Length: 93
Image 1 (cartoon, helix red, strand yellow):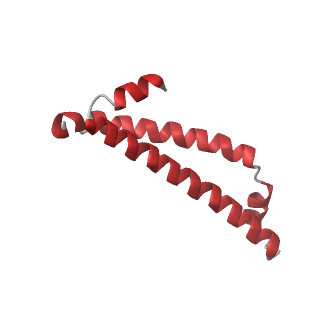
Image 2 (cartoon, rainbow, N blue to C red):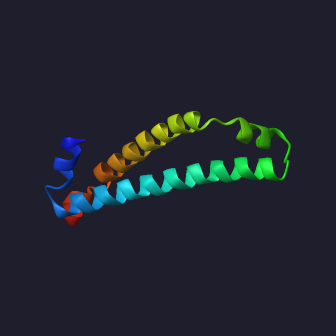
């Protein structure tokens, strides 16, 4: 993390791109966890049945944590790819 912070705070465009990426990841994670919680609560409160509702009720938040790790890795990979392909630092720096 130290090296990513050093990289990000060397130039203003890097800092903005880093902050946008971290904010996007945080929003996606929060929405994902909220979705899981709402689905689990709805299934319990309204006695909803079916394959989807059973899956949602049996979904452990520990498993959701692993899914979030994968989402974070994918987000960073896509972010890095966009940074390289579109040469953001050269265009905006």
